[in-house]
Image (cartoon, rainbow, N blue to C red; front, side, top):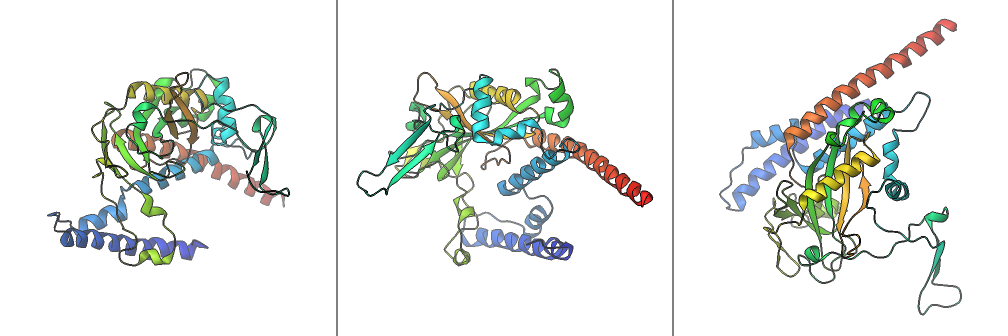
Length: 361
C-alpha cells in the first residue's frame, strides 16, 4: 500500500494509530463480554500496540527487517551478493553444504530422475518427470521421513511429520568481514538458541503448517501450553464479519491435542540440550554471518538418524514461542547500531560519488 511518501506517512500517522486503537478496544470489550474476570486498560493496551507491539507477528516483521537490511548493507561494493550464509535459504544448497560440513541434514536420493504415473490415466496423461537436483534439476527427491516415537505418541493417526522450530542468533553477524575472513571471527559460543516450539500437526494435514504450537522451555525441555496462529492466514473480506475469524487466539491455553484429546503439555522433550547444541553448532558451521536462523528439527523414526534438520529459515518467526527478551533485544540493539553505521558509510560513499561526478561535469 506504500506507493509514495504521502501514502507512507498517512499509514504511519493515521492508519496504524487507528488500527492500534481498534485492537485495544477489542481486547477491552472481550474482557467484558467473556465474563472471565480479566480487565484491560484501553490506554495501556493502546500504548503497547502503538509504540512497542509484542505480538508474534511484530517480532516476525522485526526479524525480517533485520535480515533484509543486514544482507543488503553487507554486500561487497560492486556486488549484489549478500554474505555467503544467506545462500543456505536455498534448500539444495543447504543440503549440499550441510552434508559437506557434517551437519545432520535430511537424507536425499541421488537417482538422476524419477517418473510418477497415475495408476489409471492413459494416453500420455497423468505422467510426470522430475529431474533430481543432484543432476542440475529443480527437484530434491527424498523418501518420506516418519515421526519418532516421542513425537508420534503426542499426535493422532494421520498427522504429518511434526517438527520443532528452534531460533538461534549469531553475534558473528555483527562483523561479517571478520567472521568470514578469520577462523577466530566467530566461535560456537557466539551462537545462542533462543526458543523452541513443538508444531504438533493436525489430523489429515499434509504438513505441520497446520498445527498446534506448543511452547517448549529451552532450559528443561518441558512442553508448556499450546496455541495457534491459523487465523492470521485466512483470506477474503468475508473473514472480517462477526463470528468468522477470531481476532486473537487463546494465549497458550491448549494442553491437549484437539484431534484425539491427547495430552501434550507437561511432557518433556528428550535430550533438549542435545537438540539446542546441534542447532547452535549448525548455525556456526553453515551461516555464522547471518543474525537469526529458524531451524526445522525432526525427531525421526530412523535409528541411524534420530535427529535431523529439514531446512533453515532466515526471515524467521518464533511461532509464538517464549524467549529471553533481554538477550534477544540486547542483540538487536547491538545489531541496529552496527547497521546504522554501515548505512551511514554507504550513504557517504554514494554522496561522494555524486559530488565527484557533478564536479567533473
